Image 1 (cartoon, rainbow, N blue to C red):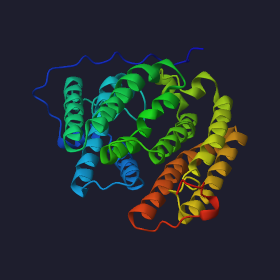
Image 2 (image 1 turned 45 degrees about the vertical axis):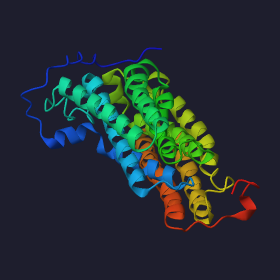
Image 3 (image 1 turned 90 degrees about the vertical axis):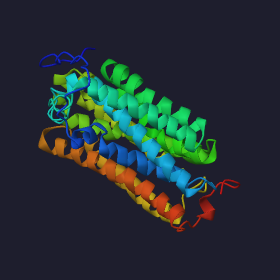
Length: 324
């Protein structure tokens, strides 16, 4: 099924040579998608603290910086490629490239330089497994998601969501030289969180995506099917958020707070599923979108507090024998 659009996206700006730029430092910072960078650093930090590691704190800090820069590089490459559709979407048209503050070629060079630098830095300060994983993450987001999936399929954010879920595993590899069950679960939590999060926004911003020609689920399958998919993904996501408890790295605080937020998530998702018309439907989707951000932050913050601040208290009755 094709996506109905009000008008076609503008032609992609041709990359230009670097030189004579009038961009300010804040414009280049915006290319890095700072809010996404913060989430990446935060989830990567949690990935480091939930695994047992004797790595030196300076090495861990340098690895976090490299992961953050790699995330920023992905953002810059994404903005370079998506400049045409960003220009026709109300929430993105003031980004540095469509607004004319940064030339496309400058953004491309900036993103590539940061990508290479972050991967080499991580390899030198940590290990090459982590560096290779970071390189794959940048490639997956910039090429597989941005250049292919985003414009090709309504499942774009489902598959592409893996890029945003990799940072805890990259951090695990950086401090242990291997990958463990803990960060695999953190990956699954972020991966399954992504569809309800973005599809709730897409229900509200479907007109924006239609104008840009991006095949988001509401524009392809309709809002009712989108609501059904949000509900189904939430039914899988919620139990996965509780896996840290039986696996022994989510303690008593995580059990209590994770259980409460899981119930809230189910309640808000059910409202989105049931309320389908008018302003109340839009408000329900907007509330769910806002809560998903808070939900993920709370879950990871509790894990960080339990392991980073020594607040972990096991729940023996719920832990699988041999997993604690």
